[in-house]
Image (cartoon, rainbow, N blue to C red):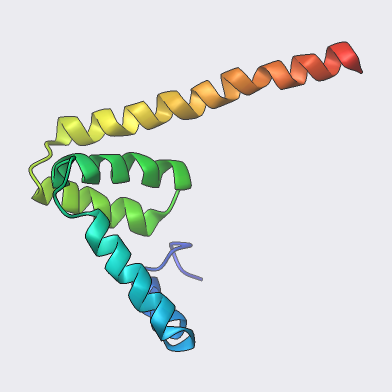
Length: 109
């Protein structure tokens, strides 16, 4: 058994996805590339957003890739940490806000 649920070489399996639907795979890669170009938001800002979002989606591959890309785009360790803390606050905030559903269910049995 592996020490990790997500093996480092797991992304190699994407070849199977590409081979199954090459035109869709190509379209996604082109879209992803375009999204991360400089625009109204800098590449650094986009990568910090991606780091935060990857923690919400809990994709270890995305966390790895986008953290490295954020650093390469000039993000400091402190900025990356702060982006992660923003994610933590929103995740906790979601549970906090949804507690109203639980208490509404109790009231309306």
